[in-house]
Length: 143
Image (cartoon, rainbow, N blue to C red; front, side, top):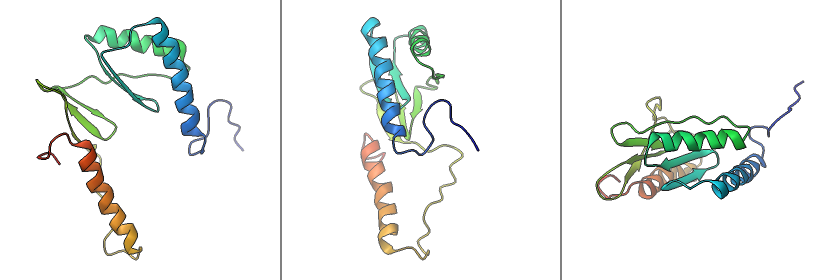
């Protein structure tokens, strides 16, 4: 037997909703007292920030640690490139360029076309890969 003392169980239908609500409350407290970075985007608890200096990023991280029970880590861009979720953001002179990002540990395995699954599952798998490329890539060449 295991008794959960804090948080929501992984896979719970309410997990995403409650995590989003919690992060919204934390953001509201922080940004009511501090300046919002130049670019700020969040998906559940993953945050993308474009700031003027690493000190500004660290100050923001400290505020998140202060107003939250969560632990926040920082990953800085390398060679003007930063992966965020499944998108690779590259800094350019004009606007940021985006492409699909897969981790180095990704084996590239997916549903086998020769499997016994219904054809609609196979079609959906291919459509998902195409849809991701179309939505994530900022240029047709990258798509």
